[in-house]
Length: 234
Image 1 (cartoon, helix red, strand yellow):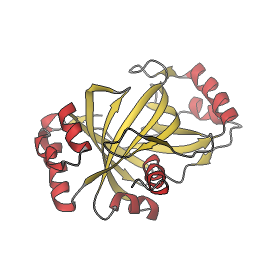
Image 2 (image 1 turned 135 degrees about the vertical axis):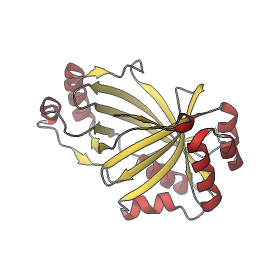
Image 3 (image 1 turned 180 degrees about the vertical axis):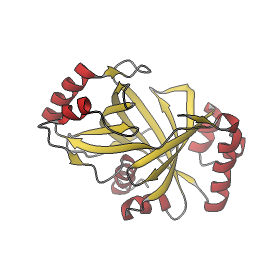
């Protein structure tokens, strides 16, 4: 069940979320299997581009919590698709071990531009309860924009179990308000994400038979932050 909160903020139920690396040949084989059983994402036409502006506080709490394996944690980001700025969302992603849920609210192009420039008082103009929470978190912890994570995604959906499988490639890191995209080294591997509500249906589980899956230890956010540090852009 999906719950709508005041101010247009949407909270979904907790979902299982698993992430893996796939070698190119394994990614091609699995994608072919998935395409035979699951439907392409209804909201996208093939491969699409995702851009996410991430925030962290002055102590890099989100970065440190991920590296330390903290079980319960939050990440804040602004996300848009295919470089189109007519649909932009502020998202709060809450994690508890391998379970997660997201809340989100629409923001404007002007608010995104202010965030990119480090003007965090733009949070005060985000509507609803989520805007109030984001602004309160910023005031308490001094949030700031730290990295834009960009990648290409192909997504598939299977209605029973509300399963979503995505293949992500061409991961890049960009310093906020910069035009230079730095490639994030993944050694040519594809990042596979598997999300579902309660139990992964057997028909989907069988798709992974014979495929070697390597659990993804670091998030895209962490890899992008390390890339900026490596290039001296953090």
